[in-house]
Image 1: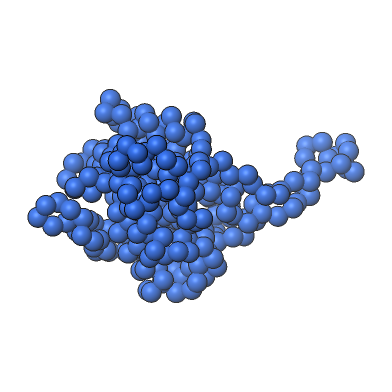
Image 2 (image 1 turned 90 degrees about the vertical axis):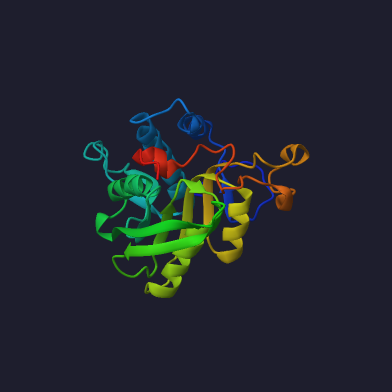
Length: 263
């Protein structure tokens, strides 16, 4: 059975999936509101990443045809349940990109443990920080620490990072796995709430094997004529980052608001 992914029309690369999900879009709009505070913030992040991961699992995780008993099998043994279920023997690694990715990765980790084989589910941790210049523009990413629990041979590796702004963190993190962690992953998947056109270009060029899933693409600083076109039609003219590399319209710094720590 092939899962029919609901996504918006765009002209970005085939590895990019911008979801067409009114429920998640509504939650995300509320999360971005200046009137939303804790504990509603983390509750919305929980809802969003539960829905986003379920969508990604449906589209990307291996499935198998199974014949299973139900509570009615004893009375009708000739009519078991025949259905598609996930292949629970797939290895999955979710990567906590601290700090904005800490809670999203935790949400994903819990859900994976309740659907897949918990013995094959792992959560890794990377401490990544923006490098900025004197004008507060992002110039790169510093990976100052990592706790990685083994190889990734044959594993599905997830990066649940709410804001895909410049792409530097994802690019550096995937490079770390490819160069320093043993084994070849079966696939790398990025799970975002918001991405920018700049992010999509940077990450897709650096890691064309990465599949990107997002609830929304923000390109609010693009010319009006560009905003009237299908996203990606004039990719080089699209802009979603301000001069300090924050997303517009965006929702502010999600790492800041989730942790109530504005540093």
